[in-house]
Length: 129
Image (cartoon, rainbow, N blue to C red; front, side, top):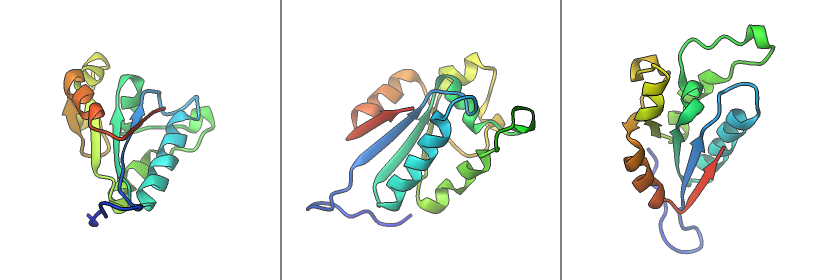
């Protein structure tokens, strides 16, 4: 991971992107992914949280032929190439949907809702999609 600059006009901000929507049917998931990559390109401290139906964004085996949309799920595997390595999933959201970390495309840290709340409080900017 590249070293982040601290202090001065180029101060690094902690940006957290919260993904709550299913991957298809709206533009939220794809727009979030694009904004994350832009933030990472500007050497910001970027993290992603997946909760509610947002956990489906990381589910393996997505097939989109029937809905006529491009499957962009493989892009999540490229996040590490952009130094985006802080991926969090809410435990309760996984459990309610019958999913486990083995069902997900990329390594994540699973936190309960209270732990996620504490993590969000430490961010400079939190954007929900």
